[in-house]
Length: 251
Image (cartoon, rainbow, N blue to C red; front, side, top):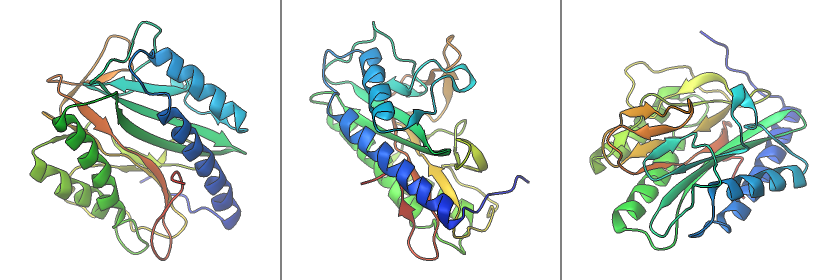
């Protein structure tokens, strides 16, 4: 079993700074979402924001990924590659997943937005996905177990009839973007590792209106809902403490 790192006080402070910077990047990205903008334009803005605040895009060139932000539209779950010819239109939903490195420490967060006026079913999907994250982190406390988080997310989502993506999960984060442990968003029989203060986790429910099954497109990156139903994504970098969890990527 991979070892889950416990961050020192100095490392936690650097991760707080990294997280705050990323929260500000997302806050500014939200302002550019509108009908008529290309997903490539969103990526350009994102990279400028990250570099402008003293960070380095951690997605750019990661295992060959060609952009600073994953821009996933409608049935795209994650890892949508920004393109000049992919234009957002009224009624779309779009997930922005990005992160940065600040003084050697990573942060990672995702949000799903409506483009202009969206349908009530799309609004509900976005809200349930977001709320499932908060349900999950109620269990992200020292002394609990990792899969308490997974089960809390699933217990909230399943009654809505949505599909939880199983092929992609959350992860630990710190000096590397992806560290142990893997964090499923679906029910687990085993308890998983015991949570300890100083663990930093990227918790990220990915929820589809229909099936939780997914497919990869030929670009090797873009993951879509197998039934082409709408998908939403919500993620934050979270610090486990001896008390309430601290969300590092929210202002």
